[in-house]
Image (tube, rainbow, N blue to C red; front, side):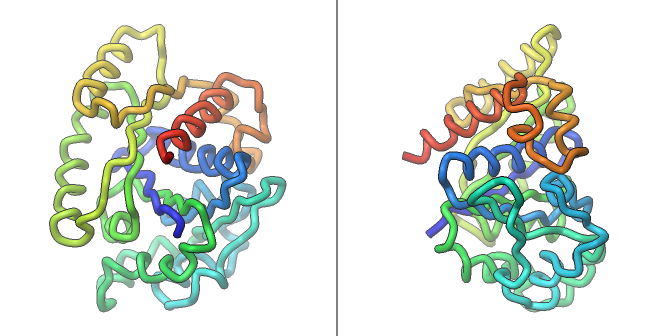
Length: 255
């Protein structure tokens, strides 16, 4: 049975989608069969893998709100063997409201993914930058969460609220939910504050923090505009090498 992992942070712009997309791509490149689920209404993971949100008739919305099977809405990602996508489209913007009136609303994604879990090694969920009903659905469906954190002061401020909400979900909805790991993203080694904040995060999370740190990198930022992960855009750039090494560290910890 595949492991389900949510990529989550209530703060936007921290490299959450970049981390989900690139780790999914490198896991697939390592021979793992991966399903990436985009439940962020911005649909950045969908466009980052080369699909047009506006052109998609079916998406995760149809699974969550209209009870369609996951298998009917999955897309195969071109040029990357073993990588599949359950996309987001414009319909997802109204999903939070539509889900409010559904029975067992927090468990809809979990029940939907249960039918395909054994077909994949990993199911990665790219969450919205909020702590709403879509994110709660992701956490209830997940075995663990990966939290990308930027090495800046505001990142530390948001972590405590995020951890409180994860604790509440563990208590009431998913007692098995674990912290898979913490990824430091958009790191600027020249800035003293980056080093200080990273040290504070390390002190707080200890061994849960990955050793590989993702630097700020122009090629990483460019890749989504080409609709590909960085491994297809510039596999030798510093950002690509960092995500490859991070994925290898992630996979080594699974053993």
